[in-house]
Image 1: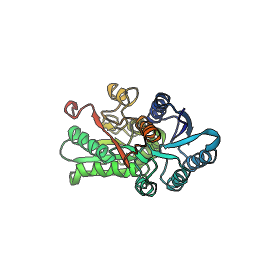
Image 2: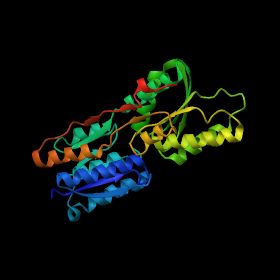
Image 3: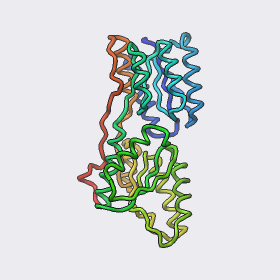
Image 4: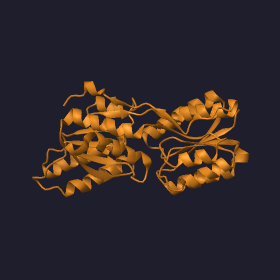
Length: 297
């Protein structure tokens, strides 16, 4: 065996995180690694503590690399530097602007991020909006935590495509369905009967898109507003969750974002067996589901 890879997930009850876990287990076995999996349950302090404990115990566990699906950026640069200093390879399974500096500091280690183009995800959301709504309107976007590069870039891509033709309402949540539901519920409680309603709702992931849907259905029944019929789009797009929500008519569209754990483990294996080091970012493609040409108003 080549050693143990530590896979540090954001949570255990999110569809995309489960896909990271499943692909990580499969690729680790194929590449000759053991894998140890931890879930932070959306607690950034807990995630940093889990990584730090793994670094401390690396001799007994034969740890060779840490893979992290970020809860928050705070605290991660320091602990990943500790990992690299301990001769461990480090991979973010999402975007993180701080990875550039650490990659430069440790040029002989595999220190990198495997990520989808987060700005392009936002652009696809914008194109979905324009396809489903038209040339102008209002959009409500429930973002991920805005102190993460992922959420910032997705929102930036959305606004880039929508430009001045659309007003954008921003609500902040934490990638979970329940927090998205609560954010939209609070927003809906302030609506007056003659309010100009958004033409479309964008969730930064499919979990939050589902929370948006629940909040809108509840608000529609309470306030007699036509909110239950608006279009919603999400992101992650697994066959078993996001694409299924689209096929069932519960959301209008999603963005397919392949899980990044497999590619990260492949690069760790190349670094460990052949000395081939990855670039600072390994980019994965993203696509609209359904394809934009198949979306109908």
